[in-house]
Amino acid sequence: MDVVALLSDPAAWASLVTLTALEIVLGIDNVVFLSVATAHLDRDEAARARRVGMGLALLFRIALLFAISWIVSLKDPVMAPFGHAFSVKDLILIGGGGFLMYKAVNHIHEEMEEHVPQEMARTASRVFSLVVGQIILIDLVFSLDSIITAVGLAQQVEVMIAAVIIAVGVMYLASGPVSTFVAEHPTTKVLALAFLLLIGVSLVADGFGFHIERGYVYAAMAFSAGVEAINITAKKRRERASTPDEPA
Image (tube, rainbow, N blue to C red; front, side, top):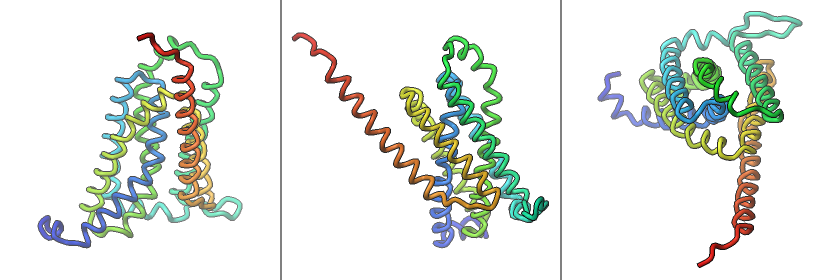
């Protein structure tokens, strides 16, 4: 289908809107991971890590869209230990989920322990490339479901690519404010780590064939975030009330 016909096709526009919305919703997990992965970098390096990581992840996502038939084949069983069949996709989800669980538990442990800020600052620049690599890796794990779902929602690869570009752009724009907010409010970082642990558990469960509806996960995240927002607002009010008025 040529570009003019594609742009004038209402079905193509409907597919684009639907697929973009799906990609953005599924990208919530990615935004949470971005805020955690860049937490130990200073502001400039964190922004650069998000920009480089998401840019490369976008290129890999587009490349995967041109290999849709191969992506779909990842659902075919490749091994069946103890009578349970596993596909390549299942193994990727288990590995990615396990990695997220490890990262979440490791960071929670760091938050509970005392660390010297100067030491963190010295090591931050050395882990820049590692952070970028993690962003790309986890983005590809998260993108598997959305790419496979895209096959049933859109018939044109051009529409899929446009939806991915828009969604990744939204994720990048959202990741900055979220990361800044998490950095400014330490308690929200522990909450983000808890979200990451929950996401990792759901990925591992999916890999073992126990699907957890993402709606339940997102509802739990939204409720917890709402409670934390109330706590932050109440804390600010207490701080304002305890601050003595300046003399006129």
